[in-house]
Image (cartoon, rainbow, N blue to C red; front, side):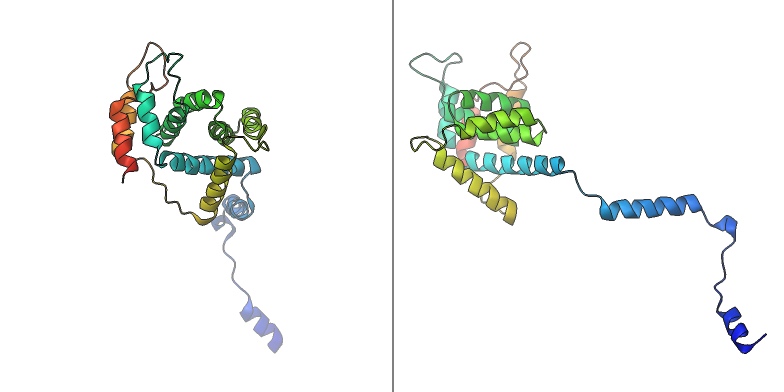
Length: 223
């Protein structure tokens, strides 16, 4: 054996016995590592998550408006079947829907948004668009987006500037992760949960707000 052969022999790396190496486990680890580094979320998943985040931002902004509690107060004092001379406070329905969404009463929020959107509040239609988009319900999301954008170029459209503000705010918060609009407090959430326990027949929708909740919302907006 030459000197080179001796050096090569000494340099060989000893191999482990065959029965100590689990080929299947090694392949599974390799596959898991590859999936972790290459897997990307589906575009629909990303779109739904962004819509949910944007909806929460918009709801918090609406809930923190200075006149939000006043509208809910008027909604609370209206009769259960509004008379012709005292129609539903549509802005109160919008604010209440946003509060319901933020306190995880999503089905009830959808109901109150629909009331407000049916009365012409494009901000409510915009919330419904984001709500359905976050659930992956594309047909419904497109319908409510149409309700938002229909005649949006009309200079007399009442909610045009409002919606532009919502879009700008939601985009800013998504990019920076900051928002001056606070989430509902525990006391406010407890008042909503209290209303949710009051059932009217087989209806599972949270009933209209009462004065107790309106007073709590006044306290919240005066912080």
